[in-house]
Amino acid sequence: MAKKLMKGCEAIAEAAIQAGCRYFFGYPITPQNDIPEYMSRRLPQVGGCFLQAESELAAINMVYGAGGAGARAMTSSSSPGISLKQEGISTCAAAEVPCVIVNMMRGGPGLGNIQASQGDYFQACKGGGHGDYRCVVYAPSSIQETCDLMPKAFDTADTYRTPVIILADGLIGQMMEPVELKMNDNPTMPEKPWACQGWDPKGDRPRAVINSLYIETEILDDLMTRLNARYDMIRQKEVMVEKYKTEGAEFVLCAYGTVARVCKAAVRILEENGIKCGLVRPITLWPFPTQDVHDVIAQDSVKGALTVEISNGQMVEDIRLAVNGEKPVDFMGKGGSIIPTAEEIADRVMEIMRRA
Amino acid sequence: MKTYWVLVGSFGSGKSELALNLALEKAKEGPCTLVDLDVINPYFRTSERGDVLKPAGVELIMPPFALDKIEIMSLSAQVFSVFSPGEGNVIFDIGGDDVGSIALGQYKARFDRVPPERINVLFIVNCLRPTAADFDSAMDVLAKIQYVSRLKVTGIVNNANLAGETEACHLAEGYELVKRLSEATGIPVWGSCGTREVLNSFKLYVKEQGLDPTYVGRYQAIEVMMHRSWDKFLKEGL
Image 1 (cartoon, rainbow over the protein chains, first blue to last red):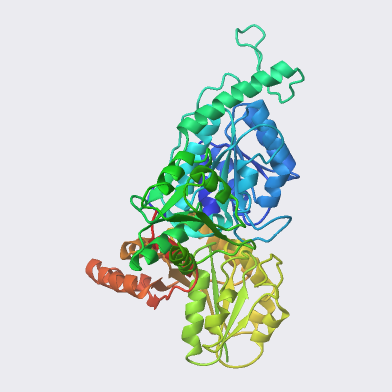
Image 2 (cartoon, one colour; image 1 turned 90 degrees about the horizontal axis):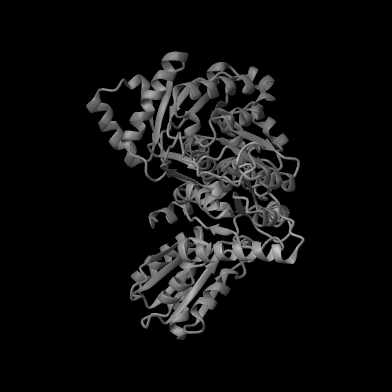
């Protein structure tokens, strides 16, 4: 399809449909309302089902049901609404139900504000719901990248039978950019013999059960062993990271989402000022690109690194773990949905360089 | 007597951008009022550019909560003041689609008292937006907007654009769509919009290809005033 000018929320919804998503359950909250609005119009056209649930909790449990029946199902919300979905996400993880959850992050905690934020990194990557589980987390930094990641998100969810989170900041949802969607009228769906699709007592297929209650300690441990083996495989195979001008850099910026784009502008400003600066941008926040981040920042040429976020500092903890004290890692960021400008970031880097 | 410009169209067709440009242009001729009647989107509204409008002498009427970054669909009672006798231009920036145009319906009694030749209702079309990409969907939105706004559209505007990636070929694509819309409805094409650079190459294209000037209309240069910082991010590519 030729390029179209699309709003992030619309593009995400269409990309999900092209990836084979036919079931969407959601509840309104700014700044992601355009996703359910678009789905409500489009899904009936492709033989799908849109349902506005009575609450976020109901919506994620409908996703649990549709995913358990083998369908590609999705829900979307923004930060406070995602908090309400956590119980359901934990249940999906425990029952090994694949699904995709889009979080258009807004300012928090509490009801916060409706501007863009990156305050839900901890929630998405370090648990969120209760129990010993992980979600694969993708953090796109443009509308095009979000569209490209949608089929990947559904594939990853199906391959590993896990919930997958698209962690986008509100900017991605609300801005308009030219995008090229890969239209796919007949997306291939994987076989799901485990799904609850009706049992034939005379057939040889065993009864499929979707369940998150494991009373016996050994049986719960079996599940956890199985999940952990899968998480290890995800760590090995699914890491995505962008390295921008990092080869032989004197300084490294670390950022994800739209902030990484501001950082790229800062890299250019620094270049004009004679500072060779690179950017490392995790695309998967879990699995975190620990090795790549380490290898970039621990290079001999690097004097230091600066993590930039629209939060008071969350991903910076994983950056520091990856660097393991080998180089100093500074942080720049604010709550209140305040996005730093490229000039501010460049100034901060120059200040750190002078100090070093 | 005042002249009224009512800008309607699909969501994301470029109404606010044209409204800002038109307001700045008309303010050079005399009194000009811009009414932000967008009840659809709390982000990217004309009210945000008060910093540009006020020094240029444009009076801005906006919803009381417009800049508080919250969503309250309220319209200022001040809107009625633009229908009082006087001179100059009044520009209405309306929210997207028919749902946005609903906000206009309540002013029907006031518009009825204005001579029809003083009311320009412009239907903005960006054929590169998926919601208005083809003839049928554009016709559908046009009919719905006229129904809920209780106003007749008087001009069609070709605003084909891909934000910073717009080229003359996109306007040429838009030309085909607005031509068909105009032929089907009898509504004239008011003009074609673009940045100065894009318009210049479109002018050449029009000449070379011998496009019918009736369906090109006036060349309306647009200086991009919304989304500035976003475009800046874009330049860095991905």
